[in-house]
Image (cartoon, rainbow, N blue to C red; front, side, top):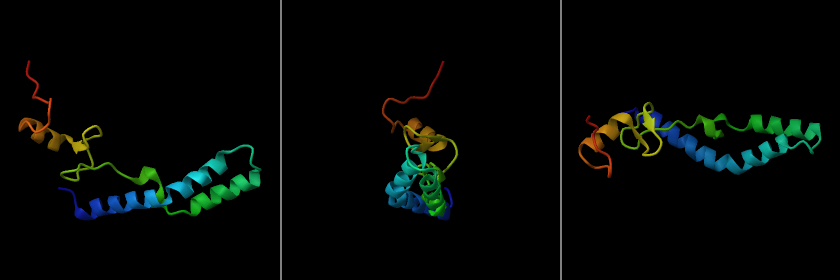
Length: 101
């Protein structure tokens, strides 16, 4: 089980990303638009830099839904490799069986 502080920190980041998503997108579009004068693009980059760091989507770390583990994460099922194996062994994931050859 991951530390609850790490899990809570990640949830806080997810909320902040959702809160600043529209503002961040507008500033990025303005900064990347070549038809806008360079001074305005530079000003947009400065405003973008003033936003909180945790409002960036890249700061979010994928975590297992059960254990909160950050490493060995499968995006398709949103579980860590350990939790996935436990659930698969007990037959709780439809269509997944243990390999044998």
